[in-house]
View 1 (cartoon, one colour):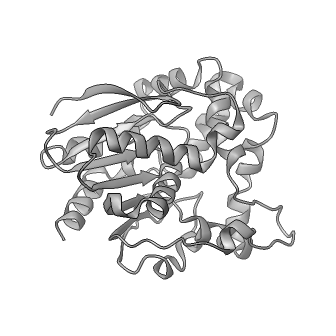
View 2 (cartoon, rainbow, N blue to C red):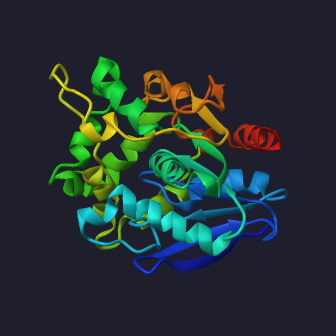
Length: 295
């Protein structure tokens, strides 16, 4: 199945996207995380394209999509609005499947809270519900330690440190979260090319700077922020969580209690995969998604 590419103007930003599969097939909208771009889902898309229409955008700030310079432009409401606009463009009359990994999972959850009737199913791969994640950072010392990198990525020196030595530290972050056998030289060069344009790295880092998630220093006292203590964070649609258990960035505590918010929850664990589960186990991930959607 061949890839095709398109662009969508939301009225605020321009989103570049890749797609695969018949245009009249049920839509799965696939959201990547940091520091990736649409190709995070490429192999999984190829596995599913015979039965579904797969669309994977470069989210704002990444690769070929617009990258507004202001931190405010990366608040959750803007990220959700991007996906709402793209979804209306692709599937205005028909509910669709939303799938997200890493930061893409955060956007997918936020979209599901706000636009539940637009979704038939929600699929998350090694990503976190905001309430569960914040609880884990506050209550689980090991998760708090694992999340300290977020403090660095929010700092003023992040761009300089990550870009040094041809992005050695940023590439090292990827390699530190789980195995990266997928990162051959061609893939490595392609990633660096997406990080290198003027303003690209800052735009990507602004996702962290705009996030309301608190990451206290180890041992510091902390409480749930008010915005995560109130409000409705429930998920009415069937929800699949795909979890690589060797993830070094996200411990199992980050999805403890998820069933409180997702009564129709299915969890599929992969003992021999880590954070980059989409690259490590694309065939198994695709089969789990296909089985879930067939009910």
